[in-house]
Image (tube, each protein chain N blue to C red):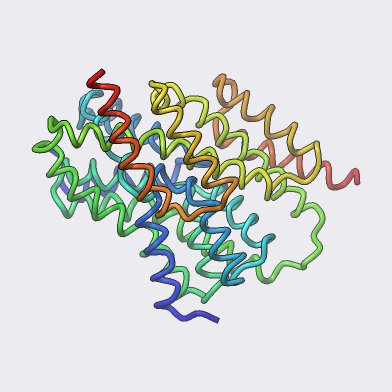
Amino acid sequence: MPDFWAVLLTFLRFGAIAFGGGIALISEMNRVLVLENAWLSPRVFVDGFALGQFVPGPNMLSVVFYGERTFGVAGALAAWLGMFTPGAALSILASSLWARIRAAPWAQAVRGALLPIGFGLSTGGVLTLAQASFHGIGSVALALVLGYLVYSRRLSLIAAVLVGGAIGAALSFLR
Amino acid sequence: MPSTLEVFKAFLTIGATAFGGGGSAHIQNAIVTKHHWLTPDEFLESLTLAQTLPGPIFSNLAAQIGSKLAGIGGGVAACIAVSLPGALLILLLAGLYSKLPANTKWLEGALTGIGAGAVGVSLAMLLSIAPSALKTRVALLLAIAAFGANAALHISVLWILLVLVPVGVWLGRKVNHA
């Protein structure tokens, strides 16, 4: 089992490379936490992600769950610090620096490259998430219907997650 | 301009009420519409920058806007406030998770449904940001390359960035000069 520092370093690395938002990291976290180190089972990984969607605040709070499952409350603190510190520190730094460099052509060029790459990584993350959380054609259909309702603004995000959970629980009684 | 405490309180409210993602919309609603601490243009620039930096966009945006409003202390306060309520709740749930019987059918069903909801919400988010992320052919190419390397080839994100960012900058420059 890992210690506090191993968890902190692992999640610091995640936090530092999570371009395109946390969701771009799902397949990378799956690779490291489940496949490479076997700190988490595939089921715990998926449940943690679902709970991260369920609680208020950043979706990536699922790392607090992963940290707790790996090394207790200290692991939760390590994962939280690791995931959120690099981006927060850079954001605070950037907000003072950006005003000065924003007009530079290289800054625009790097930003222009990072946005679509981040989008591609996010799409890969959603695919990984779908592969992990889909159990049969019913959940695929449920995800597509809920996604459409959210995209067309007929359903709020929290309502979509709650309705999904309620339908999933109801269907389990029929099986 | 608000004090650090006012920034902390505003972001604590956001952190406690923004369920299921969509954090940027919640921050925009509170900071621009409700408190008038930033103009819509200033907010949009912060959002773009938050997407460019590594880390969760929600907390990055909070840290950035917090520091814009109340200095470094404001940035730290905003980042902690926005993730504190959810972090405490998920820690509580993690503690309960281990005490739950392994074969609770309805709970497994509920989590599968929540997972499907999360995939749906994520798909909706991808659809809504696609127009701004994929403006050019080069951008579309970079997105497909990043997607393929990540999802099909399972290459580490770090390597993908080290290769694709220079390629993207170079391709982008060629297009601009043409």
